[in-house]
Image 1 (tube, rainbow, N blue to C red):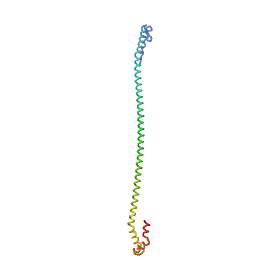
Image 2 (image 1 turned 90 degrees about the vertical axis):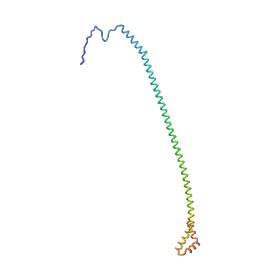
Image 3 (image 1 turned 180 degrees about the vertical axis):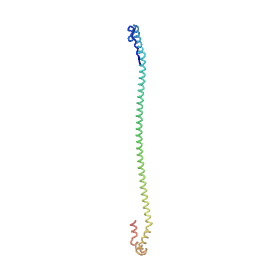
Image 4 (image 1 turned 60 degrees about the horizontal axis):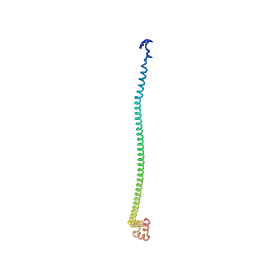
Length: 180
């Protein structure tokens, strides 16, 4: 596939590895190398250094700016959390005050309701006592008449005789007084 062609090298001709050079080429090459070196060292490298320094400054500036923004964000977060805690504490205080006020109002309403209920019970008892006295006064003579009539039937006497005897003995009045 590959074919190598061998060339014969004549020993009298110039060597490809070590070419013959004239004495002008070495000093000229050395001068051109020094000029190229100085050009690179004095012009190109400082420009690269300047670009590198500017770029590094911009990067450090951005890093500082990012750190500053991060510190501001952290401060804002802490302020926000403080405000949240303050708002929660305020809400708890308001809730506790409302609960205390509600308990006060509830106790006042209970006391007022109890006072009204006690007053109503006393008024009702007074009304019942008044009605009892009134009913007793109204039904007293009727009960006496019914008792005399019943006694007359049981004893077989006339009602006027039973009533006169009972009045003499005070039986009806004592009975009504005991039931009183």
